[in-house]
Length: 181
Image (cartoon, rainbow, N blue to C red):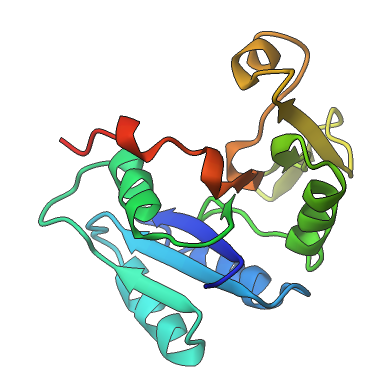
């Protein structure tokens, strides 16, 4: 069993997917599998994914449905397909620093009551050759939920959760609550 599965739902991300996958295969923590599921992209996303799958056997590319179903259905299918101890998320238009997963796992292992953690990040938006970096982000792993502090309480409070940076203990994901229809 692989320790970490990275969930990477993809739809029309040909412009970003190569840098995203480069950042994942370059992780210092190597016991990973990357589920790169395509939601019927109509650009060259699937061709990029196929290329990367041939370069690195840890990348598993699927188009699990017969039509476009949306982001949530792809993530739910990935939940059904995984057998790892941890799930890490990444959005296909993002990239991770090389030690992201290693640092998150160290944090999770030190905090046994932590169900999930996320990282802060920098939003880099391109607009007519200007690069915007928003100042609220910080460069650290952020404990955002535990047995004592549920996620929904934190969402309504001061914490920002970057969905595409979460690391979750798989055993706490309730698969029986998933609705694929």
